[in-house]
Image 1: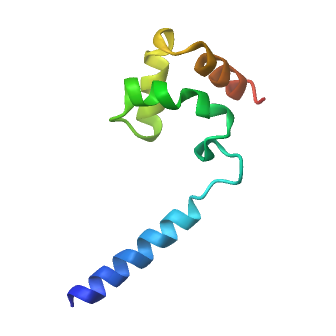
Image 2: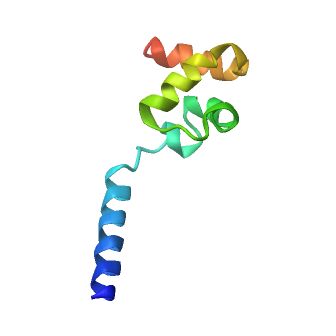
Length: 79
């Protein structure tokens, strides 16, 4: 029984990770435009996820690095 649960968990985790893999050069790859915000996200919003993280970043906008502010503005403008 325990092995079946481990195998099922591994399959589900692998499927979820695969389904969420961003395209090459995406924000999660480290090469995307939002990579400029990685340190700021860790510093101010590490305990937040999804919409809560976005709200946290907005609430801390005045503290963010210039590079992160530019990346956020470019993303909002669709660039």
